[in-house]
Amino acid sequence: MNQARNAFLHPFAKPTKDKFIKLVRGQGALVWDDKGNELVDGMASLWYCAVGHGRKEIADAVAKQITTLEAYSTFDPFTSEPVEQLAAKLVSLCPIPDARVFFCGSGSEAVDSAMKLARLAHVQAGHPERTLIISRMRGYHGTNYGGTSAQGLPLNKIGYGPLVPDVEQVASDDLEAMSILMTQRGNTVAAVLAEPLQGAGGVYPPSADYLKGLRKLCDQHGAFLIFDEVITGFARLGTWFGANFYDVNPDLLCFAKAVTSGYQPLGGVFVGNAVRRPLEADADFFLRHGYTYSGHASACIAALVNLEIIEREGLRDRAVHIGKRIGDALKALAHDGVIDHARGDGAVWAAGLHASQNNVKIRDRMLELGAITRAINLDTNTFCPPLVITDAQLDKLLDAFAQAASGK
Ligand SMILES: Cc1ncc(COP(=O)(O)O)c(C=O)c1O
Image 1 (spheres, rainbow, N blue to C red):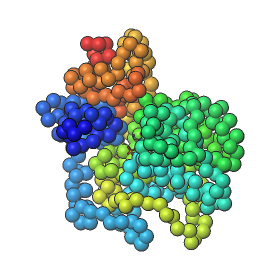
Image 2 (cartoon, protein in one colour):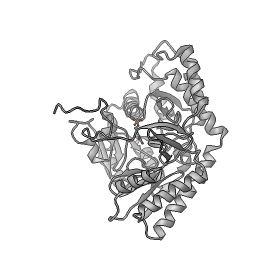
Image 3 (cartoon, rainbow, N blue to C red):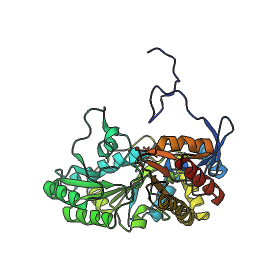
Image 4 (cartoon, rainbow, N blue to C red):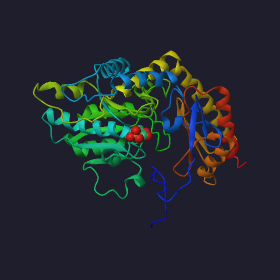
């Protein structure tokens, strides 16, 4: 056991593995490893780098903030200009009318915050019995205890002892199952938590009218609807949010990732009127939830510049173009029998493989060919490139996949 190991214990990896690809530089949709190999980033790192790598403009703005005041707590009584500005900007983009925004440091913290705020708002409204949070199989909501409890990916829940009580999953696109559980649990349901498009579970868009059905069930049962938009937020679907794309408004909306494109870690939750009202009803009520880095000034500056780039460079439109090219290419491969099927929306897609194919081998072959995909479950490779990827780079990515999936 005292065998020497790297000091770094990698996330989502075997603790015994010691060989990793060391990436040293990035520009746009390209990254380079320490051996000089160039790779097309087909995954925007981990679904987050919307504006592409190597943006000096963001680095300069963050450096300026760090040398002015890197950060300061925003717990009562303090605030800062960057966090106020970012909150105003985000609220202007948010599909939920009259929302406010709560900040944290990651998607996992956003999910835990939304789960806590949903239960808390019911308590403040005089309904402490409303504690049940219902999520969906195949859902991914991060790896804190709240998100681990709410995940619909069973392997990720093993070994961590008792999880958060009263968090249950139902089958993914099954409104009937959701309706039955909500009816059984009547007025003890606090919230339904759903990704509009399930991402890390394998890229599954919702079936037609599923999300509208969720909204209706939540309204009927007095439960809040929470959208986890950690992947779908900020132009990935060609709209600011999945709520716009699928035309369904939640009461709480979690975001992270592309809010800064990863230049600084940042997450947050939009809090709509239905949740705000009870939280604001008692002027003496004190919100006992927050993180050291809630509203971190340098992270907020990174987000402001990142959002400006998304707008200035028309990356929502670009997402539509990119998504069409990936979707068409994968559908053509499915038509030719190279893969089983394609699924996706906007600029996030998956190749559903035949049982005879191996998604890890395809990923590794693609790395040799100079392109990055992700291998998910046993039967899926995913695509979610930076929204600045060029057509030539897209061709290289898709050609590498076609070749690898054909076993060549
Ligand atoms: C939908 C969703 N929610 C939550 C998370 C967790 O975010 P983080 O890894 O930043 O904690 C992720 C991460 O992929 C995600 O895709």
